[in-house]
Image 1 (spheres, rainbow, N blue to C red):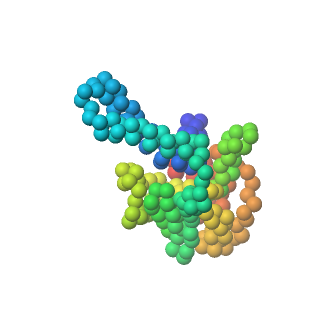
Image 2: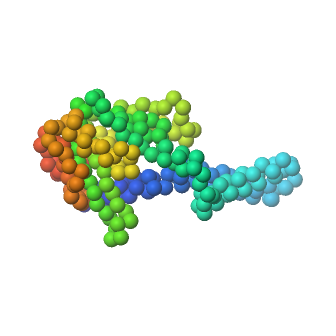
Image 3: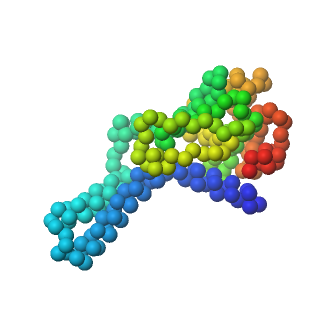
Amino acid sequence: MKNKANQMVKRVIEKFITKNSDVIFFILPLSLFALIGFAGLYFAIKYPTNVPFYGWFIILTFILMPLLLIYGFVFGFSLSEKRQKEIEDRRNSVYFNDNGISIEMKLFDKTCFVNWKSVEVITYYNFSVSSDFSDHYEGYKLYLNEIPLYTKYEKQWWLNKLFPKDSKSKIVDIKNDTKYFLQIPEAIQKYLTSETVTQKYKPTTPENEQIIYNKRNLKNDEIKRYYR
C-alpha cells in the first residue's frame, strides 16, 4: 500500500510540474525577487537615513517588476503568436531510429537517449484519479536494464545550470503530451517486435499497467519488484 501511495504521489507531482511549468520556472523565481524587494523595503523604512535615493529605486524595482510579471502570468497578458510558438516548442518530443529512442527535453535543455537493446519491458497506462476525469494520465513506461544517456544542450537556461543532476532511474516515462506520442506503437512494432501493436488500448489502473512489449515475459508484480 505504501508503494502504491508513493507512486500516486509521484504521478500527481509529475502532472503538476507538467501542467504548471510556467508557475515553477517563472512565477516562483519572480516571487523570490519580490520577497527580496519587500525585505529591502522593510529595512529601508526602518533605517531610512542609510538608504540613498538610488537605493529606493532599486528596492521598488525589485518589488514592482516581479509583481507586474506575475500578474501577467496569472491573470493573462494576451499571448502573441510568437509566445504561443515558444510554449509549443518547449514540449518534449520523441524520435526513433535504428539505434533507439531520443526524447528532446527542451524545458530542461537536454536529450534522453534510450538504446533499443536496453529496453526490457514497455507498458501502457491510461487512467484517471478523479471522478470528473480532470486528472487524467496516459503514457508509456520503458523499463530498462541500464540508465539512459542524458546529453545537455550547449546553451542552457540559468536555472537548469543550478540543477544539473540527471535522473538515475531505469524507468523512462513518456506522457501523452509529448510530440509524436502516437507514433510510439509503430516504432515498437518496427524496432522491437514483429507483432502488431494497436493504439486502441484498454483503460488501466495505477497499479496494473498494460504490457506492450516484454523481453523476458515478466508479470506486472515482477516488474514492480525489479524496478522499485
